[in-house]
Image (cartoon, rainbow, N blue to C red; front, side):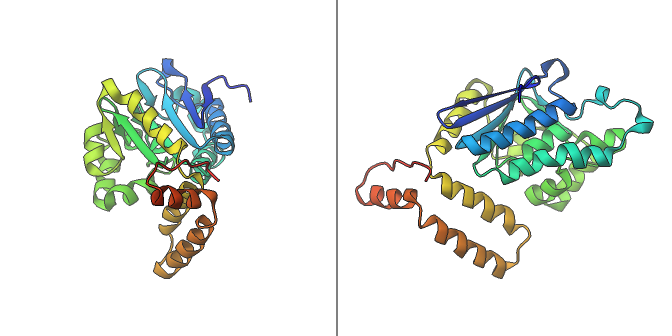
Length: 258
């Protein structure tokens, strides 16, 4: 696909996908949704870690309200099912870690696409907002799934009902994201995090994603069975053997992702 609204750059196992509609704070239109979905799927096949970030002062302000056309003809149910849901599935099903490097404002669907990623690293000046109720809507793009699981029902309800902006530090303290980083070191920090994952045991990372994500719908017995099956698979990888040898030989492991 010839991307017009994003860029995707693969170097040394790290695929960096950048949302590039800075003039509208990287808000999503139909084209950008399709391109992001395609880029995540391609990166999942070719990279060892994927990073999604934004150009300019926003990660993404969410849905481009100027792209909705006649409100009387707007079918939000179809829009979510056909255009947003595939992005969320692509992130969840990617066989490698997906990092959201939130460089600025993340609001509405932009916030929830970030929160769908495996790890969220935010610049200290970034913010998160469930802006939906301000225009008479409910959190979408997976928001009603992610919020209560990340911060509990009480906090999720407040975030959704009051639609108040959270600073990155507040989101970090609440457990909504992995970490907030001062602006001066933000890019160097997330790049180092991505490089760390890109040189790690990729097969183990894939199974960690699967085990933790499926745990949300499993009872204890189902999860124990899943753990045993995935661990059995991980124990047959070259990276497991390399990790054990490196430990015994007191040297850094060199993982090939196989």
